[in-house]
Length: 101
Image 1: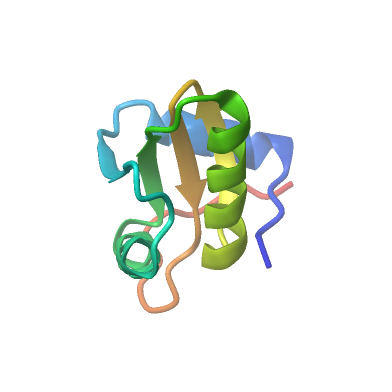
Image 2 (image 1 turned 90 degrees about the horizontal axis):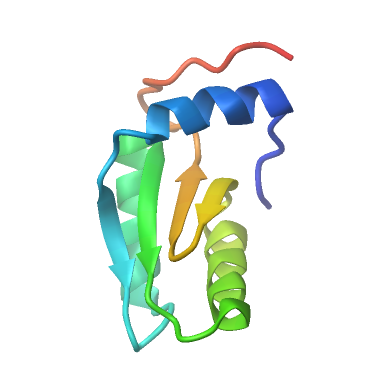
């Protein structure tokens, strides 16, 4: 289950993600259980993550990003070309406080 964000929350998170470097990259093997485990750990630690998706065509990228969002329980904040930004609040120690509404 993914998280629903309002437009103001999405705008807020896009502003935070602007200066981030891509922490993860999906290669030719696609979405593997090891990658999903790493994504879960990185989301728990950072909450907001940039991921580079190296797929040939747009449909394959969209499918991979949709699978990441669904399996990680995160929200897709932004997608530009090969880069997707995902957000999921940390269970242990929240760092990002979203605006209301």
